[in-house]
Image (tube, rainbow, N blue to C red; front, side, top):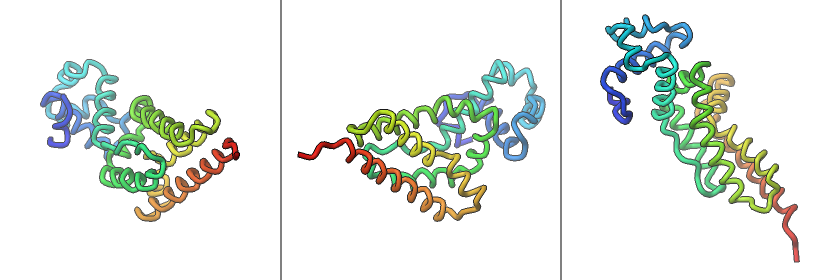
Length: 196
């Protein structure tokens, strides 16, 4: 249970979460009943309700475990560091591919979008605003949104799973797009600069 040591769950909660994550590797979460989870844990359904109170509580805990286990690096403070950030971020995704798939289950992804993904968007907007202060606010938002989209598990998953790109091609493809957006941001900023 070492992967859950960082979380403040009791022993039974950890048992339930680990078994639920294991079941999610083979089944859609909506197809996994509390009875299935209880059976896998060799405990009663009542015990699961006692420790998580509701299915929503269990789903929230699963989302917390998934995002915490991914432990993605923080958005850099300089926009010029974003291309190197792609490598670090996508390495984390590669190391935790099972968790990425679990994160995309329809009962989990909204919870992640409302927490970690929202934080990542806010961090990206601050980075763009600080890097291109002369840029119109709406243009900053567009640039931040595009960068945020490229630097997320959805993009990694698209290149790796849908297009069947290798790890290197995936990183190269996203770095290419990130560099193009940064260059576009620099070009856009020059439009607002006054030359004396």
